[in-house]
Length: 112
Image: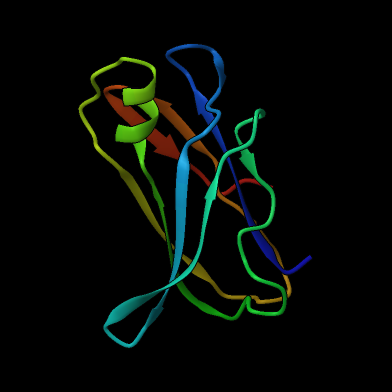
């Protein structure tokens, strides 16, 4: 399936986090190169973050703009962003990176 996807759930509200700005980057040498900006859909998902044919093995970073998301809800959060760095070892695989989010914490795991 050769892709990276995400699903953001706002555990403080018990709902998908709609409209979270998400930024995907790939590490090239000592720096990260931007691949895609997206917003989570009404179900809190971005189904395919990698442009077609561009998933390669390497280090990737997903950054979620939690400040914008909570600010739009009138909520003051503690973390302005959540950045998740992960390894793609098999460029033929699908990588699902969920984010469980609240104004004062977040967690993630390798999804399926």
